[in-house]
Length: 309
Image (cartoon, rainbow, N blue to C red; front, side, top):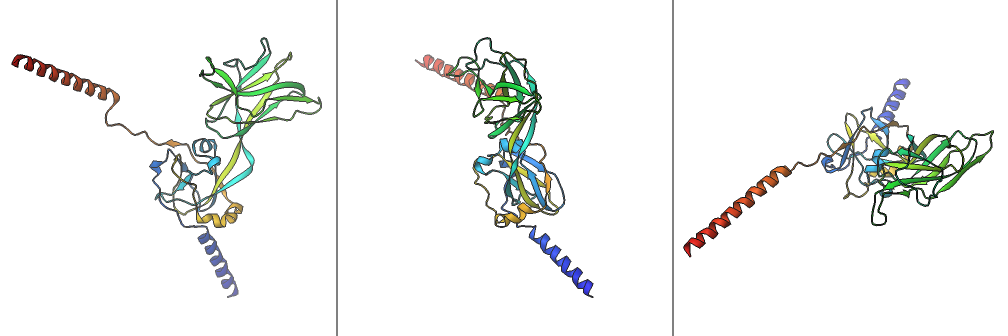
């Protein structure tokens, strides 16, 4: 009898926990009004930590606006409340570094200088302020380092030019042959660039061997309780929304400390472009016919008026 009572208490407690993990869904929203939609992989009900990946960082209104346009929707278009977790450890994105000649001459570079240049392809444009970590296998060296982007010709320059995106240019040095060199970490603001250029002033030395380049992005996760039997979508890309205000924030500590299943949203599905009623070719054909008809009518009226007079 005692065992039955204990079992009943345990089951009741478990039921209470499950009930607590099913917060009230929020107001409905039309996903078609967002520029991007992504599927959240299915899973069991419970705490989930959804990774804010580079695409979400770049195409949403981002951490600077507290991800104001980011929403999680269920199959009925109801909002699933979430809280934002800012992690201390950065999100690390390895970058390919291709050694090729820079497309333009660095500003202030003396003629005949010995520079190496590397093209770094970013995951996508419009990434937030982040850091670039550069590694080398060399043990004894001293080099000047810049991180730049290629800008097209404008009113300030007749030709394409390189512009710094690092907050500071720096000298990278290491003088202990018995220890590997620490990675050089630079703070950068990529802006709308899809690729960066790493420039290394080699002096009169051979090229410094660059072994790895990593992009260190700010790391966030969206924490929420997955409802039972529901397909979920992540949507973002709107300029008219305020940051969400969910009652879940009142118990955010419980959710932030709960054991959670970590998932990454699937690929982006941009909102389909609205199709016009007629194609540009049809528009110009109709306009030409209308103009020709109007001219013929004017000529006819002018001729009739001349005959009457």
